[in-house]
Amino acid sequence: MPGLFLPDDDATAALGAALAEELQPGDVVLLEGDLGAGKTALARAIIRALAGDPALDVPSPTFALVQPYDTPKAPVLHADLYRLGDPREVDELGLSDNPAAIVLVEWAERSPEITDAATLVVSLAIPPGGDGRSATLTHR
Image (cartoon, rainbow, N blue to C red; front, side, top):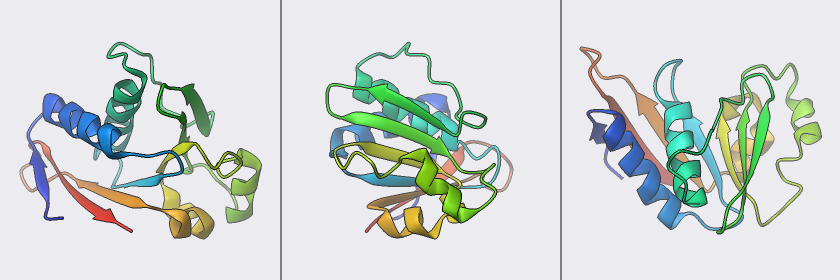
């Protein structure tokens, strides 16, 4: 899919809602991009849409590594592998324990196992000039 321009947080939330509609139990979504590119903002929008709660508290999983959510569509696991010390540590996180879960992963390149399991890759980037962000979606 060609790149999308997301001019603001509302556009990011709209993309998250659209992705939430498409996601199915068992999907593994990789959220790629540099620090500040909007990975957590997009994950937050997806989770809120799946939960049907626009005010749901969705903290970054940077320190917990994984945040679980129960949603009407499927259980959701939001993971941030940035602090993962060794790719083998991903097994301890339980990301593949429930085949019905929707798994959203930031910094997935730290685990080839997770990268290989991806069904969708969302690459986010801050365009030249720093306004908004661009998103490219790749289905696998």
